[in-house]
Image (tube, rainbow, N blue to C red; front, side):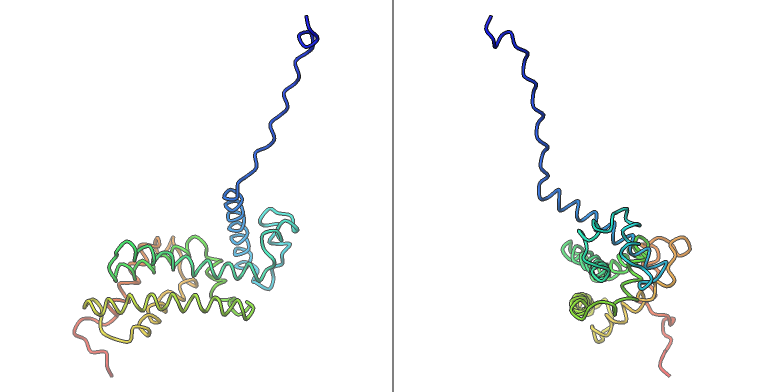
Length: 223
């Protein structure tokens, strides 16, 4: 018998832990940031933007304060990310419908659906979008304004195509787009899914009021 035969078999070394790929790390970071934004939005809604500090946000998100700074640089960046999330959400919605070949009226009603869906799922984020935009740095405000203007141009273009197709009354497309947004810009103050219905339901009702108007057919509204 050789020495090798008489000796105990060497214990197997444990395999080194698998390294996470960049896609996994990116997804974890995205999810963690979404959690942070959601909890921060709830705090902004309950206490007010100026009454919230980073320690409160860290506690609400279940993080240590130093860990929180790994994902966001400060409260102003959190607010900026909230603002951008609202704009990106509605812009992605209409872009997908345009790519799917939806008709102008469907595209416009879909914008209302997306906005009311955000109000149902992230009311604090939407409230922060409308109420705390001036807290952003000048550079952040400029970027959000650029995004908003780009989205307004998309909606105005959809309205123009609707006019050209005979689906909408001829008017100034930009002004009509601004009036179109006016119907839902105040909705964060009053929308309650339990009272007013799910996003699709209330969006259809509001869009019907906007598209058909308040006056009965053949009634002159000029004074």
